[in-house]
Length: 387
Ligand SMILES: [Zn+2]
Image (tube, rainbow, N blue to C red; front, side, top):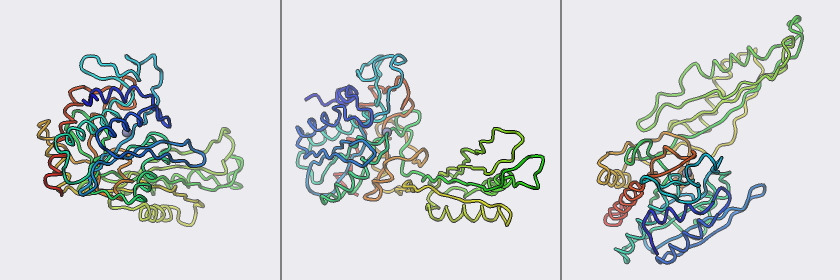
């Protein structure tokens, strides 16, 4: 079987695997990995109210150390097909660039992981240790029947991982820019201020909730949450909406609402943050503002994989291949790494993210080769001196 990163990526791009469709992508990975000697499983997970989703787990080797590659084959919808230069599911190449939905996020990354692992196993069939793949079909969608359940399932089988590389597109501009060694957490809160409806000409008979809401929001925003930590930017609170929904100019409304979202660093847990928010609101409210605060449940907790030997293997491989020393970053949104980190240290490094989720998503063919070479160097370093 042809296992260059380009041919693997093209085969994957030709599978229309828009969440929650498997589209043939996992079947393709299964056939390639099985042929290379991996033990492959295809667990399907369900949950009332969501579509069943197929997933894949594969392992080569039985001993330790165990290096796991993680990723997702599902993709976001292509949008208006007429806007694409090439059919998003055709795997077409133009001017050295491979086009298709998932080219960088993240079928291209999976192709590079597979190509690197196959090369490594061909060269070292009896290496001591294990290489595995944890691939979900539910990352871009509701993400309930994906990585979380797949990790639980693997744990139930007695699988234990030592380290994980998640191949999300981490580079903002060019290959080699950035490794992600952590992610911020995310927490959403909703405030409702109670008032009393009435005629604007008779305000003494009403209680306008809007000034109270303004005071609360001012209290939330007055002081920064923190000033950042060694590896994280400062935590940030954004008010995302303020709603009164009052169409009449002569009516004082009965209530006013606001929602905010916080992206927080490793100084906080959702619980400590909630306590701080509650304190700020109560100080701003004094005795005069009647309000309720409701924080939404979150599974997005801040985490950090401290820069150690494992992170060093990846940074060194990136530098050897690209000449760039990658920035160790914790920026951006959340990712499945937040689930994996509960089981083992996880580092994210993949392709260049510039066109992800866009029309004409594409990856340079040269980058596919270079990312494969980087993963290959990591495998060599990891199994010759496991951290
Ligand atoms: Zn992704």
